[in-house]
Length: 168
Image 1 (cartoon, rainbow, N blue to C red):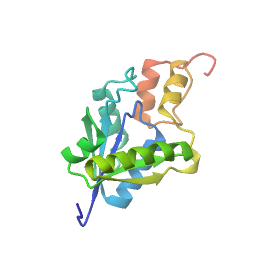
Image 2: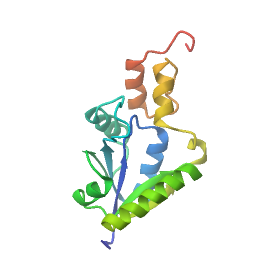
Image 3: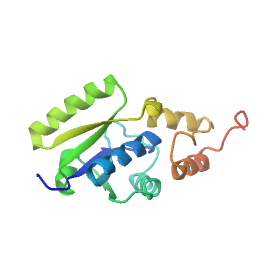
């Protein structure tokens, strides 16, 4: 797995993708050159807002400004996706200490099962509060989230949940 230009897998449910996710992909491209963004089905989050196909379309539209990025749907373990897509590492974004604890345990488990290592990338300080779950909730109540998500995601959320009169 020691190539001159390693590639990485950035797995996540991305339901929906937000600007923190975009930041991590941009940093991963800068560091590694090649990133596979895997829109994953997460069984612990069975009631997703968007289908895998919708998420893939929004992710592709949101990352169209980047070269070296491929978006793929995947239903299974991230370590299996890493093998299927032939990447060298998994990359994960960290917002806070809580993320580190969860991601560290997952990284050690993934490495012990597959040998795939995880690389952590800190998100920008102005994005530490971003969460797809909160963005979904705020959008469902008709509030503007366009400053938190890429334009293609904002357009889809606005279509699904028109802004309420209280926010206009």
